[in-house]
Length: 248
Image (cartoon, rainbow, N blue to C red; front, side, top):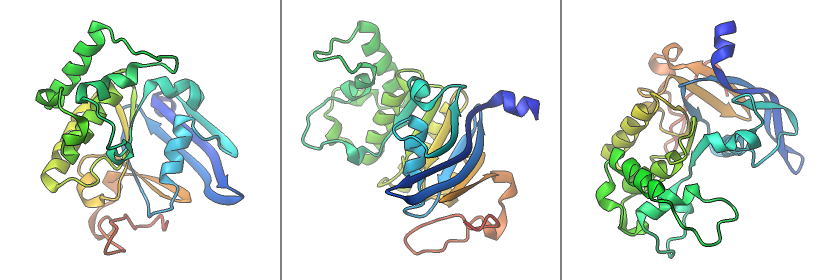
């Protein structure tokens, strides 16, 4: 038990959160260890995005405690890379792919950004690692869905985070690109703890080592304990979700 606690880098204890008095998350107690690859699963409205916002320090729990790398979420934020869905970006704003990556090195006071040479070199190196360096000087919005997600992953990695969080990184991409993205994340997981929101149980289960089932309450499981029919019981024609003995 002591060894597990020593490796735990994300800890939530009795966390609760409400919007306008309506409970969204209740009694959330989970531990995530160094180099875990965790899929956060749940139906729409289950509190998945709220949980990520709490971990990033953009929201404060109404009750309970969150510790990341032994710090509060706000203080730990600089050690976290966040990958939103690319749909969050303004399609009318022209910006090169390499500049999307470099944006993450700016501070709140950077009115007229001037990047150091090493920042540009690191951005290009990350694009090369993610196999899209040939797109460095293309407009971001000319890219395919999978290429955009790779660029946003590079953007999240430029500050060398210890933890990477992703919001449905394979939304709106085809199966081949989905596999490429998950293969890339698996490679990154060798040195980075990863949490991702997803609905795709069948695909992601072969990559992650833990699954957090969330539907107001949370239940954490190792993939090894979730086998057979219970793992792939799909309850909706439009949504793939894990149903098993946690009954969330």
